[in-house]
Length: 201
Image (cartoon, rainbow, N blue to C red):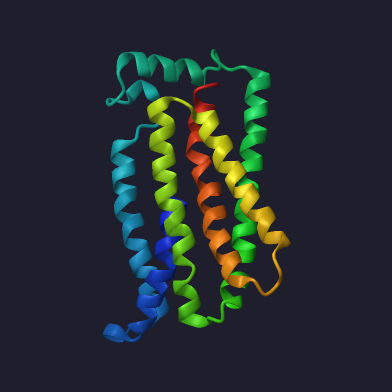
């Protein structure tokens, strides 16, 4: 989910920062480093203090959760073949992200926008993906059907990519709409998949 939120905010932040180039004597690129670095610095302190290195010292785990985590780390509950198959599935799920990063700029440029305007048009696909990812994760966890949600999300993304491939070269508006759908499906498949994996190793 952090990837979708970062993708959605990245274009908007870049647009806003460029409009304030020279503020307090700093160039836009310096402001970009400062503003994007502040949350990392703050969260790193929280992570250092809150997240333990080993489950034995995790105060926020119950005894049963702690014992389960320890047994999983020792490999007691691992199942070789299933683990390998789920690992391959994670690899397959990662493929669409290359397509998104490679073809998104081409589609946005084809809409006739450049520079800052193009930056703004990178926001909606990731914003859609962020919302759909949260809803999919909540639903998958609520009804305990992670495999189903993962499969549906991947299928929707795959269909959207295939349709894009068969559209005319000039159909940029349709491709942009399908880009939003493909982004949502691609990102939404990841949390249920990771939850599914962690429940089966």
